[in-house]
Image (cartoon, rainbow, N blue to C red; front, top):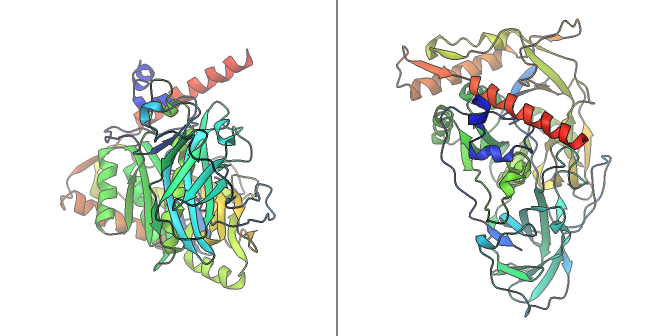
Length: 484
């Protein structure tokens, strides 16, 4: 009965395309993208070690385009592409702007468009959602009513479309880019027999931030304590700013994020449902809310920073000085365990000691696991979750040694199920980081709870676990049907 009721929630229409989810006890309102049309696992917690320093990480790598010709490097996932090319366009046969009710399976949803000034011109970047079949169409970009450039969509997630890990998801994330010779005052996009005047934002590339962290869309997310752990751990490693994308989160989670927003260290970005029509609803067949689009968008915003994604700032500075041709760094993966359980239920917030951080264990880092990368945003073209899709000319990706950095992954499926293993590494979270996390927790909770140290709070993950079981059952049934 619980599963049946949970599936009445609108967001569970993504049922076949979400590999694992969180949930929320009190949901925030959400609305649909104000987009143009043409034609967690919940928030994760990971640990990154650099020497004797550590940080808890709950992000995915993000990506950005820089237009131009791209070269391949050592990674098989790298591809070559150009940033658009001059072409001819016969405009009289194109129709007027499309409206939401015109959405079809052949349409392209433009989530965000930006223009970046470069040394060789201006770069237009478009983040779009469409089907694999419709992505084969050429898109023409007309600048200032004169010059026209052609560009084709590049699948952000993988070389193959559909992605082999989400073959049942019909809608997926794509990137388009075009190098413009002059500053645009008007951009019109043509695709098939349709056209639209493009709304775009101009972005700047330089700022005073050192390390920006991107967090993919949170949905059905309730673990507000994890937010504090993550932010404070990353601050101890030199992080300047955090971009949090959210879809539906609990009220307490929003309070925590609003507090950090008020301090200037967090930018909150609502991640809305995609438009739909009577004929088609992309939200029913998209993988994890198209999180790759959010990753792209975040690196567009993060161009003001020196580094983006998971890193220890001083280590990055050192590596960057010694490798001027490095565009990014690969970090090996390891599993993280807590021998003490994190709190749940109702408790007095002032009694929190965070003893689980003092009893952490990890496996030996293994490059065969789901690796993560650190990026210099201006040197990378496109990345997927675990690899680089495009990299700018003359730059390479290198792997950091385990003695330099490792990504310790505290996944919910194993975090409190520590195996009997003599090779486990004990006490991987240093006392300095533990102190910073607890101190930050005190500051946040004192503010939110109005310095009432007798007040209680609730951290109830039971509904979240029920949703995960429901999704697991549905995935199992889907697999069985495919075998028939």
